[in-house]
Image (cartoon, rainbow, N blue to C red; front, side, top):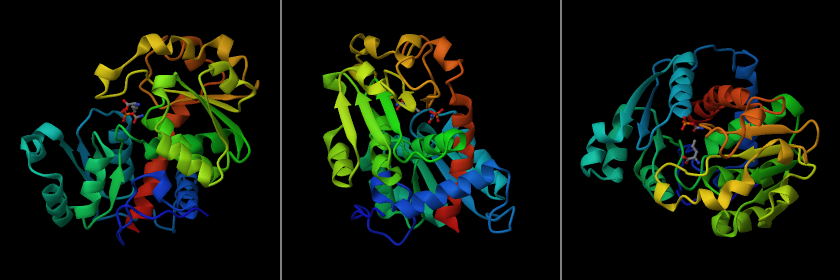
Length: 310
Ligand code: CP
Ligand code: NVA
């Protein structure tokens, strides 16, 4: 079981980053997610969150995260309030700390999609209700929890399996790195030298026993892999730093996928830029589980909400 010192010390159940959560908590969330995926009710109560309200705060666009949290909360009997940056006083400069204090008086939990982990931690530090990380440019833990659930749905445990990441060492890649010691898979990341994931997470995961390989060669990463993962070459808010010319040889196409195991899965958090980071042939082909992955956002969000709120 992994424990780390929480940067945000609190008795409240925040879901911030996978390196700050215990393995047992992640397992419990996934088990709940699997139960919802199988349409089972949890704790014998089909509407456990009646009377509870979740605020969804978006400083960046979203389709999957917004709809899965909104539908998930309603399916559990609760309600949601959706706030976009420019509709709130955050957009006019009200501080995150004051916003956290105020929202805590109205709602039972807040999901925040914001630019930096600094903003997210600031919200958690000043909120008296659970804060859920709905993506920052530094990580995307809800996504990777859905990805782990998707692998387990199709192939069983990730322990000992090889996951290959190809492309930008971005927020989703960092959450995969942080997931590695919890679930015991080997992670090989192929990224251009200048787009390698931040070192801190790699060091943390390795000190927790994770087997992580960093390479600039996508073929080395994908060789015999059980799961091949990629993401957009240009993350939201980082358009100026985008380097598509460096990433062309990291495209997941039939030639690259042929190096993985014949039964390997292909995953992408979506939205995909078809025929850029992944070809249509792969995205729509037999290895791809991207639609299940999108559906599993819903089941995992319900697992996260149940852990935060019950
Ligand atoms: N994968 C994901 O988080 O998608 P959205 O940006 O649509 O929420
Ligand atoms: N890396 C992408 C993920 C989108 C869900 C981004 O941050 O834009």
